[in-house]
Length: 342
Image (cartoon, rainbow, N blue to C red):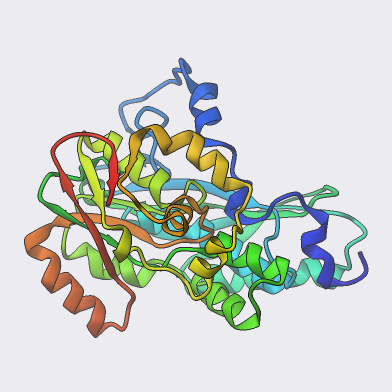
């Protein structure tokens, strides 16, 4: 425990791969009916990426919390990724972050310098997002964990939800997939430093710039792709929207090394949990195994899954190119239900 190089050895499954099974979560919350005041715009009924409470006709508060064990040994990278992952929930709702609090659990035996590196990197990422890290709560725990509780703001009529996808929409993804596959493959020695660096760059990238471009296009449905994988989050969008999402398997963007790792049988612990959650709703039409693995791979600080009318697609793509932002068109929305991958 004396060095930062053993950070990941202290936990059982890092990043969003540590997320509780979506299928078990649905079972756990079945029948739970919380109070729903009039101004609670988003809560557990039709749950989304964050809770939203309306203050008045011009302002609503977005509140989210997200934390997990380390997926990398570098404490500064861990802090930056954990912070970006939590902040991105605010951007996925169409809002902007205002205030954040740390949620931290660390073994007392870890050097103070290691824990401080996590905090400093998270604070820098919060500042980059235009918010303030104002405090938090830290407990002793043999398994390290870090994340944020974040409050943001949004206009009540400019809120982005998972349930707005409509037939005729085009589907886009604002980051390549495969963070879980790449990190697992690096840990096994299947991939090296170059692939790890690509994954790190994407995981520390905030979704703020992508969200800023999207606002002018009034997207129908938006969610960030995290622990449930692309197929799991697409399943949520389809269910909330009462529509069928058609994903083009060959258009799914992958991080360098992700498909190579999948082809060699590398998987994370989140893969089978995501299949348990979404497999009944996902139709695969001869999709190669490595692309199926990419679709079920749990993402940490992933990109935005976006639905908007297809006639807006060319202009949207031009704006993303002009801003030097990643964007992949991955499918469309049709009448029906579930997710089809072809």
